[in-house]
Length: 125
Image (cartoon, one colour):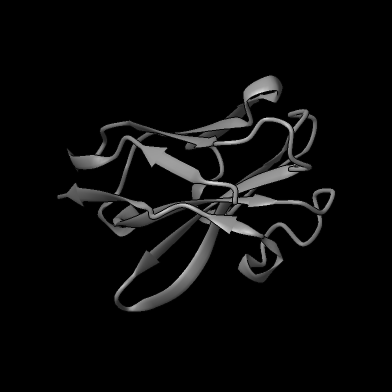
């Protein structure tokens, strides 16, 4: 069973930056894409960003374009999410997910096979 573990997050102020990291436990499995999603009590899980294992393909939610970067390390199945100029509406529980398909439907949470527990990011105004 693959384990996906997130780290980072916490309480920050508006305008600050935060870096979230995610590692999948087994480097030999067929994971071809990883994504980040955000969830709040008021909303369903929503897409934030995704990246192919090679790093050649990326996608970002429109609300965060220009404020977020994503990077990966192929041999470790690690993906980092850097979020800059944070806003209170960025608050939520951020979860990392791994996909066995080749970068397919990356904005749809149902296309992912393995999920982490999530890490909370709270942005105060």
